[in-house]
Amino acid sequence: MTRPRLLITRCLPEAVHERLRRDYDVVENASDASLDRVALAKSLREFDALMPTITDRFDVGLLGGRPLRTRIIANFGAGTEHIALDAARDAGIVVSNTPGALTEATAEVAVLLMSMVARRAGEGERLLRGGRWTGWAPTQLLGQDLRGKTLGLVGFGRIARETARRARALFDVRIAYHSRSRASKVDEEALAATYHETLAALLGTADIVSLHCPVGTATRHLLNRQAFEQMKPSAILVNTARGSVVDEAALADALSRGTIAGAGLDVYELEPAVNPALLSLENAVLLPHLGSATVQTRTAMGMQAADNLDAFFGGNPPPNRVA
Image (tube, rainbow, N blue to C red):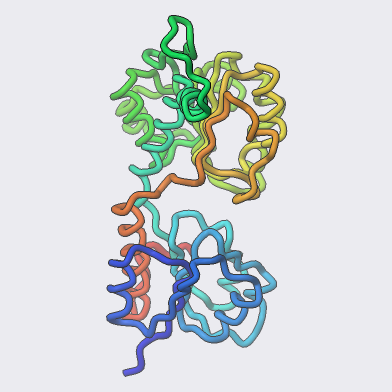
């Protein structure tokens, strides 16, 4: 029997490639560079299945072409905003993702960012590496204690709740949240979480604001100039969700004027480009989208994507189908 032809658009952990090579006619992008639009259009015509990442944008124009050979897009990652899901449905293409596998790793980075900003760790490393550290001093780089502070979560999904669990264990923080719909009483009680009906109410209460909301038109620049003015001057912003949730120009202005104390970002609206105004700010900790970047997590994501492929080509619904 002919094996399904599969394109893996980026280099994944070797264990994932080894598994997929056993059951599929695999083509791998050895350069590990993002594929351009021409290459993505060609892939839809030449492969039965695609395993893309967030760097591969399948818009209406690409998915509206005919004829298309691709029957399933098994996305490597939880977010699917780079795939026009309605257009995929119209084209008869199944789309799946890899939720859950990256929950713990992303929550770790959220806690790392709030810690780094509070303790001014990025500033300290730059001071030392730049040869400007002259030795210990009683008032050098004084930061903030996080113990007992209020962690405000925008969104209350898996990653938000895991971030809350870890932050409570480390810093004994109080948990508050805002989301489109209120969580169950069980989920609230598990974290002693307080629900705020409006974002403004949450922002005015929180010492740390951690973003965990989905991407979309409703959340684009949700954190804007007005939102920053509603936050405490001592507040810290953390974003491990999606870059478009934050108005980066307004954030840079808020940080430079002291409207808020600091920010830790792992995602950017136009990544890999970063707003230049953020790069010069000492009170901004900037990471290169490390949320799920552990060997174990990225391997688990690949295996979950492989499970989706196996189910589909075995005649069963993919366990993580989104379209």
